[in-house]
Length: 134
Image 1 (cartoon, rainbow, N blue to C red):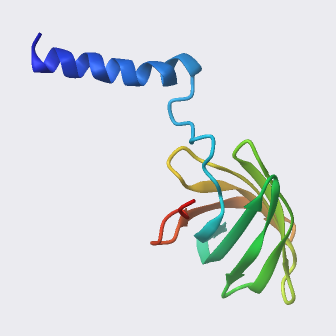
Image 2 (tube, rainbow, N blue to C red):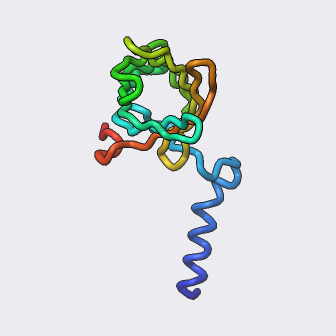
Image 3 (tube, rainbow, N blue to C red):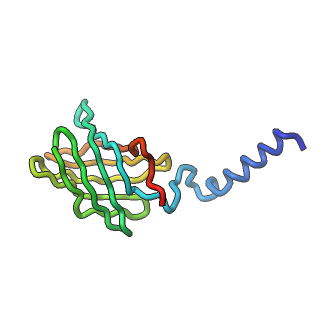
């Protein structure tokens, strides 16, 4: 059998479980949102970036968040289950921000946020350090 034929069969075998499950980009089951992230809030035609730190323990999600616009805040009432998350970001000098989103197959987070009477998009990627090792 030629190298190309063997390579093609190997690729098909590795792809088959994803195709059968219908989830070609599904994150690993044990992938955690715990760690440091750079978050980007779409605010109209502008993007506001900041630092986000999540700690997940079971389904409970806590952490901290800070942007130049909001100042420092804490993650309260957070929940992360089946790669989906929701949490309230509480700030001393800014209205609360409600986050809803999901951990994507590419390792990023994205979703919608609500604050100040509007709902817009947000996304985040891990800081340069990458995911925590466990």
